[in-house]
Length: 105
Image (cartoon, rainbow, N blue to C red):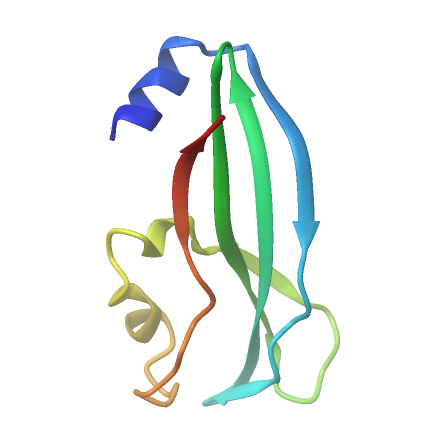
């Protein structure tokens, strides 16, 4: 995308201005794992370009255990079907948090 190309051209000047985390979703059982979605909003800039990413992390742990691991869901923007490939036991009607990037002023 134009945003990605612009940010790459300004490599080394990328500044995260603000990150805000939302409330995690309820736990979902996916086979022998439990997962939840942790939404966040990030505002960043590179030179005179500012972006606002509204996305989420996928938090995973073995069912009934502690020790969460996290996957950044940014890769799902272009390939949302990967979620069910990674977690085939998730309900098919699963609704994920928003996952988009936009230019802002």
